[in-house]
Length: 212
Image (cartoon, rainbow, N blue to C red; front, side, top):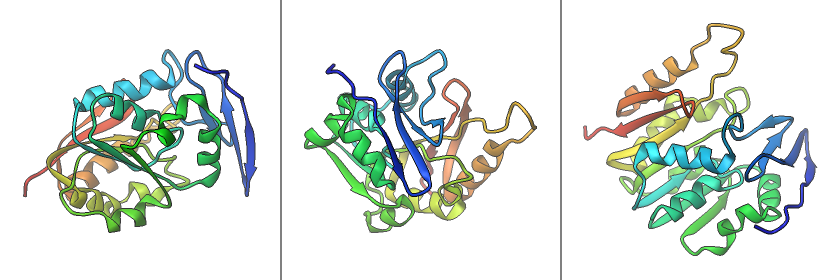
């Protein structure tokens, strides 16, 4: 891998940084890392998420691109193509400077779109994707991506029996008995997903689109 330029960018009210880890760099926004890095690396974190889904083919929707490691891993695993959304222009600029993210811009079967996933999914065909990777920012900064309305939109564009991974993290779990996963699971079920399981190793939820 080519030498990484560790960059920082200020955009609006946010501070962005490409930060060192034991593996691929991670993205920090306002000091918060966008990947799990304790006892793992960003690239292994992405790989572990996709292994839970058994992703080895098909069409993939990546709702929150970040540095693109999950989209790239999906491509490497055999995805037909990956459609990846990113809301923040500064994140895309940093990804363009990160050698580990180059396949995002060089591979014909990875397509990047700038914009808010909540609105962009409205333009997608129904029953189109085999897999969805939903790895949103924290609830406090992107609450609409944790709501029933968005989950219903995702249920429309994924095929029956299609599988989704939804990263939730464990915010405030050290300090309060706050179980955001419970609310997410309830809303996913209402939106039309089944076989909903929380996976503590990757701090996220797997589920399958129901046929009804």
